[in-house]
Length: 149
Image 1 (cartoon, rainbow, N blue to C red):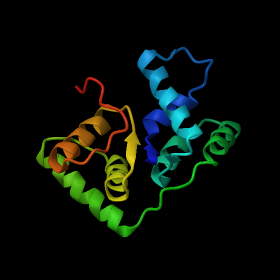
Image 2: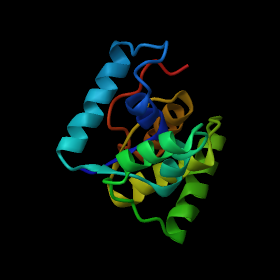
Image 3: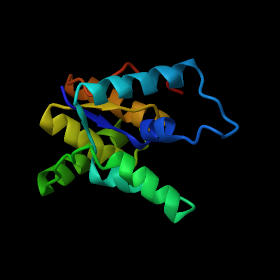
């Protein structure tokens, strides 16, 4: 099954190695899952995720480097129906008391409508996925959620 990779995972995988924060065991496992999905040719990128990953990069050189790393991954097409589904899923999550972001809901809608899974490790996204899975019975997460707080 194709995998939509969330910004949280790309951020882990593309993190500058010289930084002060070293990845913990869970983060290493998530990056390994991404590498496995890349090797299997299963990774897709949603345009808004690509935009989030590329936003806020300090230098043109770093921007070009990250863009080049993302270039090989095909885009998941996005249509009006996906945006409408994202709004429906947003409302579903809000009724269940779950705060959610627009990009997260679009990624969930893309996964829901196109038989994809999502690789993410972000508390808000995980709570949204859990609410949608509980309501619809449809699996969206590539890996089980961590300790959702």
